[in-house]
Image 1 (spheres, one colour):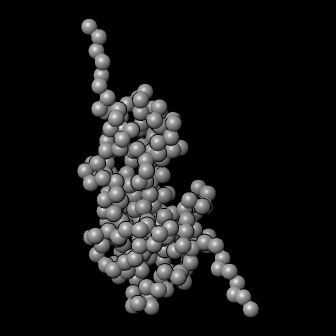
Image 2 (cartoon, rainbow, N blue to C red; image 1 turned 180 degrees about the vertical axis):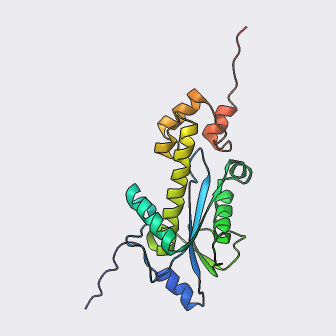
Image 3 (tube, one colour; image 1 turned 120 degrees about the vertical axis):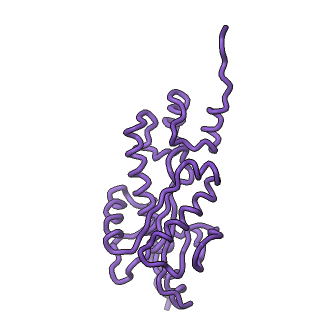
Amino acid sequence: MTRPAKPPGPDFAFELDAKRAGAKRIAGVDEAGRGPLAGPVTAAAVTLDMRNLPAGLNDSKKLSAAARDRLAHEIRDSADCSVVHVWIEEIDSLNIYHASLLAMCRALAGLREQADFALIDGNAMPRDLPMPGRAVVKGDALCLSIAAASILAKTERDRVMVDLAQHYPGYGWDRNAGYPTPEHKRALIELGVTPYHRRSFAPVHNILCKPTTTTN
């Protein structure tokens, strides 16, 4: 007799592995915003209550905006969670990779109760992680705690970019979240670089360093 196939979507297998090893409070961690030309990189840490899970948790990329917003409210109501933004100065100083890891560590530090194990989306562990942890490749699609963190990071960062779009119209940040869409790149050329653009990213750096021509 063959065993039924595992249903698609994230589950608690990684959390259960950590519990078997002695962990009691396990936080999932994910980030949003590594690729955009503008805005912060945002990380979330979530310790779920296994007895009170929001229905429909999944990788944020697989959910509609309405579903993400609903789930973000339910996660905040039912879980211990923390969201942190790392802004332009630190992104340009550290580079986006290290800024993302810093955001993850700060998100973990912001939990009401310190986690004793962290499940980190991706293939790298922050060096300054204050507790044991495990990197989970494609964790937002496999691990419920990371999926919940991905939803919070995505919705919070999108909210920030919608707000910034009101102050800097023309770049389409309410639609593209700062990613390098044709609309955004065209606006960079026509409108210039804002204080919220990442100067260490090539399309922004190239515009800043482009020589100006003068006529006599």
